[in-house]
Each structure stands twice: as structure tokens, then as C-alpha cells.
Length: 451
Image (cartoon, rainbow, N blue to C red; front, side):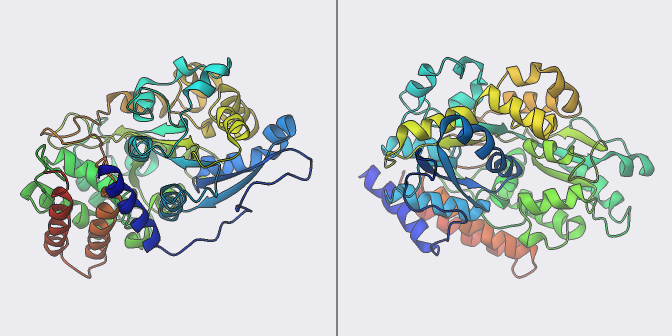
């Protein structure tokens, strides 16, 4: 019964969205023009994925003869598309980027290849070098890896050091959210057109839902109690959400209801906001002088807190192989290469060391070139990843794991629907109280499956 309900939830969520057109040749593997195999890879459109799509042909494909057809989609569209493909066993893709949320659920349903056996056979992969929290988050109930990490992240506060200096502001290394709000008010308008802070306002359980849930955690709230009592309209959840919505409405980026990770990255790198709370993986792009106007002038602080000692999330964008693939050997070769030390070195040497897809290997932080390029953010990123505790991210026991999400199949739909209402509150189309009262009813319906 549990498995059938899971399949129904995921398949229904996927079917609710319109079918998306792939951007680069998915639709069944075939022989490449050079006579080698061809695999289809679906991935999120973050900078690190854009990099690998440009580097693969002249390196991996040249060396192996395996052609890689990439489909790159925005995060919300990616989640819908990959869920649709995997949950319905469509078999359109040989490899897809997924994360810690999907792995335990999909492994339990038997939808993914285990990858530990491939990693063991590749003597150069060095599974023991992977950071322990990352390995745990991508492993199944049998202790085997079901995804290979491309890069991993926690969350932290990024700020424009020049603006802070001009205003005489010292940003604490461990700020509280009230301190962040006070600073945002003070630096709002510090330069023409500059807003105080960027916070995700784009609906989606992995967009607005991710950053907001870390705020809820540290304010003392939770989506569910340990015994599956819904808490979406609890005083703590409301206080956190009101704080978040008020902050972004008063001092946040232009077009906040449509702003996710990508939009905030652009706003920060183009000096349109003075601060940004988001993924630690963003630092590499901010420090890239070829695309960022703020490179070399960014300060970093730990994720802001209220009641908890820390509040950073834990996530990996990782390569998973659906069991429906007919090209397992070729797919595994690509995944092992994309997660390897050699690939990190390739990025560093060809694109710049700040752009290395880091956060997954201990050895990355021992590379002299990377240490230099990541001097401002490398240590705080590593410590934030190591401090994140998906089993205990707040003030009360949780029914399942997850810092910025709840690890049940229903959360994909629940988190998205609730954040749609909160995004509407940011836009001024509804109130936080109504959004959370409506969300409470949805959460109570989900909780019935587990009580």
C-alpha cells in the first residue's frame, strides 16, 4: 500500500504539470555520429551544470566516444520533468540530477540503480574522499549510494563588503535574523537601484520553500511534529513566515514573487542587492570576475539564526541513474567522471578554480589553487555542510529527516502549494494568515497518511 500511494502521489504531481520540451535532443538513446554510444542527461540549469555541458564534448566524449545529450531546465521545471520520467518509468533519460529529498524515496520504490558497485570498480573515484554528510544523504536504506554528488551545499549569508564598509556596518560571522533585517533596512538604497537583501520568493518546495523552511526551523517551527501533527499555522510557523514576507516586501529585490536562486544570483552579482541568503554553492559564481561585478568584494557569514545554534540546509545536486536506462555502463562512466577529482581539476584549470563544483570531497579543500580562489568562502562552506543536521534541524523532534524539506513523497506537492500562497502574500495578493491556514488544511490531509 505504501509503495502504491507513493507512486500515485509522484505520478499525479508530475502529470499536473504540462509536458516540457527538452532543449537538446532527449528522446531515446541512439548511436552517435562517431559510432559510439549516446546517453540522455537531464539536469537543472545552475551554473555548474552549464559548465559541464560546455566541457563534456572535448573531454569526456573525446576520450570515451560516448555522446552526451543534455537537457537543461529551470529548477521547478526540472523537478516536474524528472519526477514524471522516473515515477512513470518512461525511461527517457539515462541520467538525471536529483537530490537528497528524492533518493531515499525513490530507492525504496526500486526506481534507481545502486551506484556503489560502479564506484568501487573505478579505482580513481575514491568514494572514501566524499564528505560523510553527503554520502549519508545520497545513500539508501541498504547503505549503498544511489546517486553520485556533483556538488553539495549548505546555506549562508552573502553581502557586499564595499556597501557595508561605506555604511560603517560590521556583519557578524554568526548573525541573527533580526540583525540581518536591521542591516537590510540600513543598506536599502545604499547605491542607486540597490535593495537591501535578496530572498527567494518564487513558489516551489525547492525554491521559496527551501529558504523559508530554514527560517521556520530557527524560529522554533516545523511542518509536522514527531507524531505527525500538522503545524503550518502554528504561532512559530506564522511568526517566521511573517518575518520573511515582511523583510522581502520592505527591503527585498524587485520582482520578488518571481525570484528564485537564479534571479537572486543575477541580482547579487550585478550589485542590485546588498545581501543575499542562499546556497553556499553560489559563492563560486559570485567570485568569478568574468560574470560577476562583485567578485572579490563579497563577505560571507553563517546562516542567520534565532532559537537554534545553526540553521544552514544540506543539499546535493547529484547524478542518479533510473533503472529504466538501457545504457547503464555508458551512463555510469559519465557519472563517475562528472563526480571525480579529475573533473574538478578540469574546471579549475579551464574555467577558474572558484567555479569548481565543490562541497562533496575533502580533498577539494586541500588543493592550493582552490584554497586561494575560495579563501573567502571555502572554510565556512565546509563547516556549514558538516554542521547541518537533517535529523534534528530545529527545536523539537521530527517525524522524518530533512532541513529544508520533509522527506515524504507528498511534500513535493504540499510544499509547492503552500509556497504558492506565500509567494502570493509577498506579491500582496493574500495575507500570510490565510496562506498558512489554507496550508494547514493541506498538511493535515497529508498527516492522515502517517497517523
